Picture 1 (tube, rainbow, N blue to C red):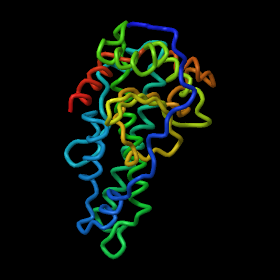
Picture 2: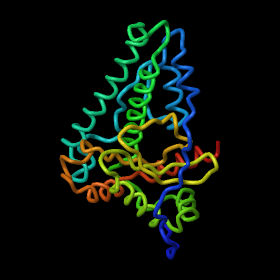
Picture 3: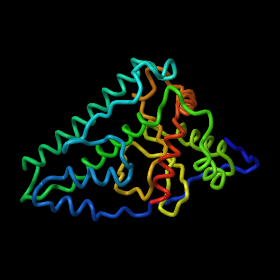
Picture 4: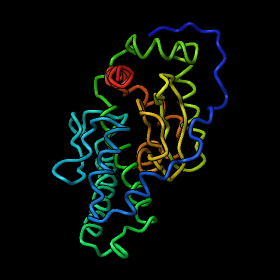
Length: 253
C-alpha cells in the first residue's frame, strides 16, 4: 500500500448520475410474456458482474466462501447468520414477486405496472449489493491494496489512505440507512459515494468495487450505534485482492 500524502480529501462527491433513463423500465412494463427475471438478472450481471446472484431462472442466496464463525469477533457468528437471514428474506420476496408476474396475477392488460417493475429493481439492487458484500469480506484479508487499484486510488484521491478515509467518512455520514460504495465509472475514474434507503441500480453508470452495508441489521447486534467502529472493522476485513480483480476485469473491458 502506497501513500503519497499531502493531498486534501474531497469533501463532496461529483454528481455522476444525472437523469435516470426509463428505457429498461418501459420495456419491462410493456413485456407481453410477463417474464422479467432475465432482463433484471442481465442488468445485475452488467452492473455487478458475477456475484452469484442467480441460478436456474431464480435469484439465490450465495454461500460465503468462509464458515459462519471465520470472521471472529469483528463479525461474530450470530451477527452473520442474522444478516444472512435478512438477505434470505430479500431473495424470497424478489422471487415471490417474479412468480406473481409470471403467473399474470400482477399484470394489467398483459402489461407489468411500472410501480411493480420499480419495486423489483429496488429488491434486485439490494440483493446484488448483499451478494457483493459477502464476497468482499475475508477472514484472511491481504495487508496491502494491490498495485492496479492502489495506483488508481493514488491518482484519483492522492493516496490510498485518503481514498479509504473518504469512503469511511461517507459511510458514517449516511443519515439513516444505505450503502457506502467505491465504484468505477465508464470513463475509468473511481467514484466514492453513498446511497439512501432506496437503491435504483438502473440509474447507475458505475460498477461497484467495494460496498459496505450501513443498515442496522448489518452491524447493530455487535456494534450497537458505533457506526465508526463498524466501518473500521469492515475495512480491516476487506479482501482487497478481490476488489482489485474486479477493478482489473472491469477496466479492461
